[in-house]
Length: 394
Image (tube, rainbow, N blue to C red; front, top):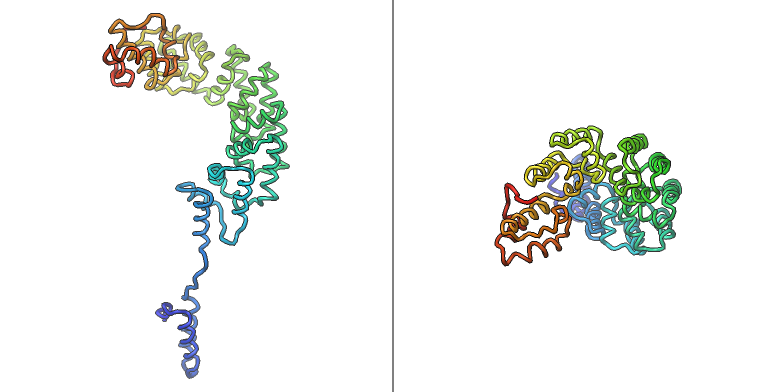
């Protein structure tokens, strides 16, 4: 009987009507046909909801690839839903470019369906606009912090922004913090940021450093208070100047690197002949050095101490050279200098630390362009095509 499914609806209805005029003895056959028709006939719908959703996310929201697949799993709507279009219209009203809308929907696809555009989303955008008076700034903040759109305005956003403002002293700086630190509103500000900020000021850390930590290293101030407190006390024990320009770098380094990493790096430096005093001196000038991988540190120490014949004291006095990329800066420049030294063309007025600190443009002008036509190998050395096992300059 399932063969009847291929017939058109009108044909099947005619057939059923004719069969119903037969004798009652055929009742079972008629019942079977009716059931077969009702359970197997496919009545097409206008638009498949899944296809509509995919099309909407792709064509109207600009999603593609993995973002499209992911978003389609977290949101559900069909052609009868007005809300997704209303949400996009709201974004357009506030001046959001399509590229920004795509980023927001990719990060939080539920914004399209779960939050009423006029009653929930618009008041949050209006609130931010009242603080900054700039649509472009609101666009930047929301794009970097889509979580703003899903947090409660009255119980989370307003209290959190007021708390941030009490630390920064002004809403413009608070908004700058939001732009630079996308996840600060995900943190428990009263239990982390407020306590950490109060402890910083209690120790005598300048307010300017607190603002820098907020604007440039926001996640650091979200560290659990007990851990953050121990980091600051360790810096004090190390006699680290809390007013140093490197203070914020040091706080971040110790917050991100566990005690075991600190100890292992100290052991590594000692194996190359550094004293504890030299290690501490190096940390105070380049705090991030304690966060480098052991492989990275070893390669750089072998170059400076073994091939360039620097002493641990000299390196601890100029640790910034350890922050440069070996492949992209240090080795190419040393190779160029070696080529020039072999032709007696280097200038003694430049120290290696100064040469390594130069911008690419300045280094090329002085040491590559000025000599490439006269001395073979200069350009090749800079391009990494010439390498040396040892250097005859210091």
